[in-house]
Length: 342
Image 1 (tube, one colour):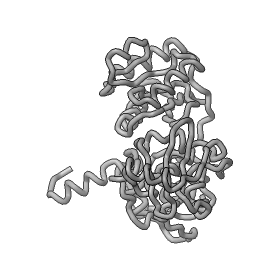
Image 2 (cartoon, one colour):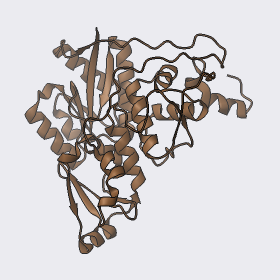
Image 3 (cartoon, one colour):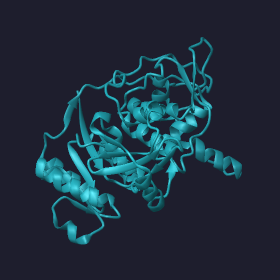
């Protein structure tokens, strides 16, 4: 058995979410436990950015329903930092670690007990063309059990002839399916809770022409593909979409445009790996050292965007990367381009 801490990340801008992921990796070394970042409210510790109205409302609601000693407020307002568990932006690692350590001291039994999955063996040879034996896919992979927003966006678009408003917990987004346009006042990373919601809990109403014209005049349109990618990436929860067979070898036909799409550093690593190599889900997780559920979220997003190529299993050898290629490969290319030594 091993210890697991789950940290909920709510209404957090993308840059702060990336920093949080880094800080959790530091905590893993300090506490000898696994730390997982999630975008719902099921965590042992909850971090909420209260600078937005949505975040402030969620913070107050969370305090009233949960033990406030495990809720961390992230804010740029000095006046709000009077509460015990507040971290001032820009977030400093020392301040965040101090609050976390205080929570762990106050709640020594906060961690969850979880059965460790056996680590898939990694390639030990330096030979780049060493054959990787197929490993069983980890048990965390399962088929979707609920219909989420990305299912609606990819499967039900033809059902909506007029623009629609999607409403979830007082957050509204507007979609014109025929023009493949999205109208949204929020940053997409802030829609993480909407992405994970069951479609049955999302109110959908068609807009009349007059209401939609007002939306078009007040909000700049964005490609609907950005929302589809975001909702699949953040809403998959490690559950493989039915169109992907876990035993087939996968390859990226093209690089996702990560400049305009929501992403974290691990998605750059996965993009680089899957454009160069063809591998099963288990092999991707093993070779990149990225947890299987995060690999699945990325594969799902690439699949709904049409970026994934599935290939049947063959007896031919599959190239794998050396131990530190993922970590240094992109920078190595830059060094080689300018004639610099490692």
